[in-house]
Image 1 (cartoon, one colour):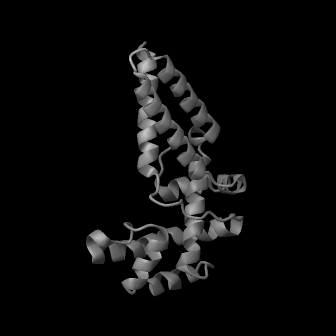
Image 2 (tube, rainbow, N blue to C red; image 1 turned 60 degrees about the vertical axis):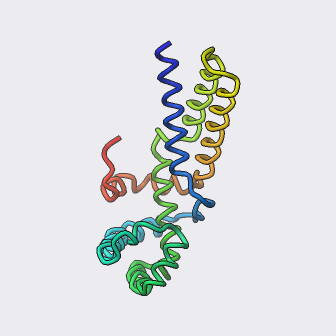
Image 3 (cartoon, rainbow, N blue to C red; image 1 turned 30 degrees about the vertical axis):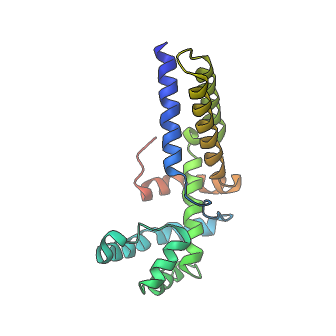
Length: 188
């Protein structure tokens, strides 16, 4: 019985984590990556981060790391900083910061999904197991079961919507060690 409770708790935690990460709008557009794009991204990542930190310090709570996607480029433009980001990423082969952002997002998503712990089928199997546990738990009311099931299914759909193209995962795998260091990711 303690094992069943642990599985249920893990399912609820996963559901909560995925829901918290769920964007308010559709996820940013992913682009098909090439080795050249990933290499350019890797070369540009730290300089873009350094420029972002400069503006974060200047803007405080409304810093570079707060807004996401298109809103980020709009905010940078409104604050007169977009030109600096555009100029910086041009040094790495990107036409603009707006072009750089989907490469960033696509690389990060391919890196994350390239981790076997994040494999969509493994996550789905864990969630399906959690659903079975929920349906077998006599302490839950039918309404509670329905609520838990709906939350788990919504989380699975949100997670699946983030999945990058398989080609991106394959390309990013070649750079996994470099990206792990770049992102400050500990060994998994």
